[in-house]
Structure formats: C-alpha cells, structure tokens
Image (cartoon, rainbow, N blue to C red):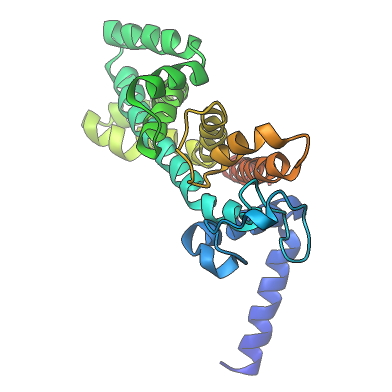
Length: 284
C-alpha cells in the first residue's frame, strides 16, 4: 500500500470515528467485549470460573479478584464472562424464535385480511394482554428450567408483540402508492409481495431485532432470578443474580456485578437499535 493510500485510509477512518456518537461507540465497545467473552471467554478470564476455594469465599473486589468472589470462593469476574455465552445464546435464540413466529403470523394476517386477519388480531390482543413474564413462568414451570426451555418460553412470550408490529407495518406498506401502481401495471401479487411489500415492511424492523435481544436477556435473567432459569453451577447472568441474593447485605458485588452486566449489555443493544432506526429513517 502506498503512502498516499495509507493517508487516505487514515483520514476516512478518522472522519468515520468523528461522526460516530460517543454513546454508540461506547455501546459497540461493550457489545464487543461481551461478544468476545461469549466466543472465547478464556482469553479474558483471570481464574477458572468453576474452581472452588473456600478459603477465599466472599472476598471483596481486590487486585487478585477484580470483582470479588462468591460464597464458594469462585472469581466473580471470570464467572460473569463465562456466563456471557449462555446469556447471549438465550437472548439471540429467543429473539430468533419470536421473530420467526411473528413473521409467519403477522405476514399471514396482513396479506389474508378479512375474517382470518380479525381472528389472528384477536389472538394477538389476547396473548399480548398476558404479561410476558407470567407466560414464561407457566411454560418453565411445566417443562422445567434449562437453556432451551428459557429460549422457548421467552420467545413465545415476546412473539405476540412483534407479530402486531409486523402486521401493522405490512398493512401500512400494502396501501402505499407504489404498491397500487404495481397492481395497476398487472404485476402478479406474489411478485408485488416479494419485491415491494416485504422489503419495505421489514426494513424498520431491523432495529427491533437488536433491541429484542437485550429485552430477551432481561426476561431470561428475571426467570433465573426467580429460580426458574439455568441450574447451578452454570454462571448464566440470571443464575448469578439468583445465587447472590441471599448474600446481598454481606457481599453487594454478587448482585451488583451481574446486574450491571445485564443492564449495560441490554442498554448498549438498545442504543445501537435506536441508532440504526434513526439512520433507516434518515434522522442521522
């Protein structure tokens, strides 16, 4: 690479960095950190997350244990990083499941119309009226706590809301002038759906997928906090919150640290989702 090309590349990168808001850059850094922890936790860990050392139990944050230890002397920092993989898997899996269900039902309701649309809309309203956590609680209670169960429970609980949004977006695009123009030109309806309605209806939902992952992680952590999540000794973030609640008076870090992990990651995904939404709508 020539000197001129290197200078040009450097200027382009510098211009890109200058135009990225600080909140977006910070959010990307947090997501990247936990993403790396989920893929290769050993790279960032300082201790074995499952190693028990009773002589070091409930140690406060120090140079040896950056975020303290739990009741069994296990390093909290390493356990939070180890749990990132399970938490992200639950969030991504639940969002993928809920979006898949919502796409099928929302698109079918919008395109079919008539009685079928009215029936599905009433079902959406009924399910949407049931709190997501309550629906997930019933499912986990019946089938038992595990990662797949949490994925299905949270996915089913959040699907009705996404289905309503997809249906509304589809109906909005379905009545636009360019769709009517395509019909007037004699284009087949399947082609109109595939080339015009679906791409324009799904475009704004890109940001919702990002936000949905963070929301799914929060729902899953809530289930685990109630004792209906992944069984110990798995260091999933919700399980860490559940394990530390009995020691909150004596060892605050057992609740604060996993809580910060959940909050910071979910908030970062929300910031990125909002930023993508603004870019898609031409606001930034």
